[in-house]
Image (cartoon, rainbow, N blue to C red):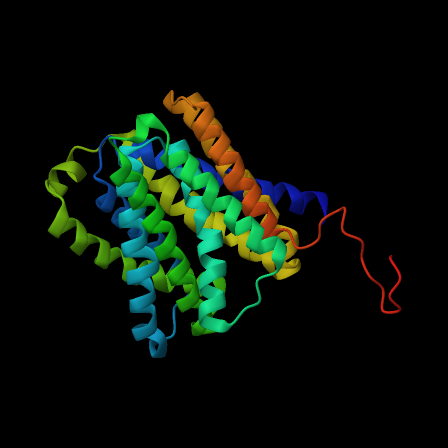
Length: 294
């Protein structure tokens, strides 16, 4: 990869990782579902003028948005509200093994032995995190985050069945439907939305702008550009920096603490995800067509 593209890939991981920190700060004023509704409203209002989703796919996009955005973000960020952002970012890594298992069930995708071991290690890390004593009274929030990770994986299977729509058109379509869905969910499950909007500070609106413009529109734009120039195997490993960014961001900006048990579980989860996503390991010899090592 070109040096500039390496820096761009790192920037995406950092921007997405900091999203948990910004969202946690934003939820000091906005309720979680309302915050996500405002986020997708801003994203849709920017992208829909340039990348309009095809009307013939509105029905599929409605259900994809409901699962992969409205339900997923409602679960994930209600979970983030009750536990540290750094801990949530580590648990969210279960998206990858969940996605691999669902792809195997839905499409018959092959799971290599190294990936199977990575799945076991990643889930072992999650069990270690959940076993942290200080989470004993907040396990419901941890399981909400895990439920969000599973729902995200289901949404990716739905997106894969949709076909190649294009990254920006997909984000635009999902945001267009997710925003009203999230507003309805907020109306049913939360209170005082009008008051929250009327009394929001510049810092609270700054969180909305970061989540809607920087984290979603800009970061996804960079990400899909990289995917257009390089293979998935080249760019996916950079996302291992995402939970690292969230952990350090939580410590430095939110004053969170990291126990040995959560740190150990997080390391296992990241190692497991690395074993799943990194297709070519440096110690694995490449085999030439004639059977000799390269």
